[in-house]
Figure 1 (cartoon, rainbow, N blue to C red):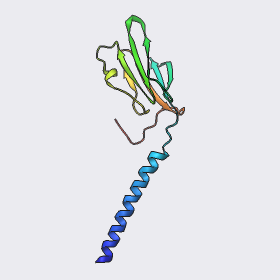
Figure 2 (figure 1 turned 120 degrees about the vertical axis):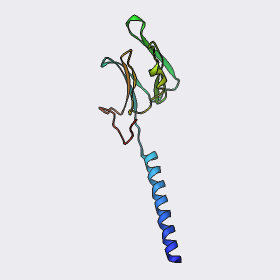
Figure 3 (figure 1 turned 30 degrees about the vertical axis):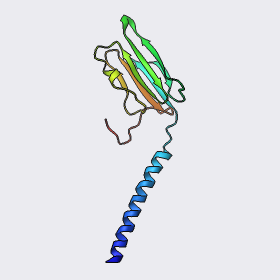
Figure 4 (figure 1 turned 45 degrees about the vertical axis):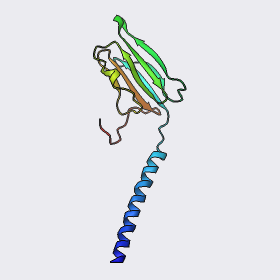
Length: 130
């Protein structure tokens, strides 16, 4: 009986240790590389923004005809639409993005902001679905 309890404890300790080691490996071994935000309107690339090493947050405005605009806020490693001329402001409420999994879209202004890591052709899904 005592030998069986020791075996169960050893198996549990090994499983916990392997789980902790794999989590540490994924966190430390993950190389995000450089992140670049691509800003498109009607599939035309308007601007690229490097999200690495942004020391001071800054805002810039993208203006279109007829008073349409999007104010873009860039911080270190993340980007968002701070203000927009669209009526629903859904793009403003999307908040920051810092990974290539989900872009920011402003449908009324036909604007899309997408993040790409290290020159990838397209963002890759890694088991996470929004």
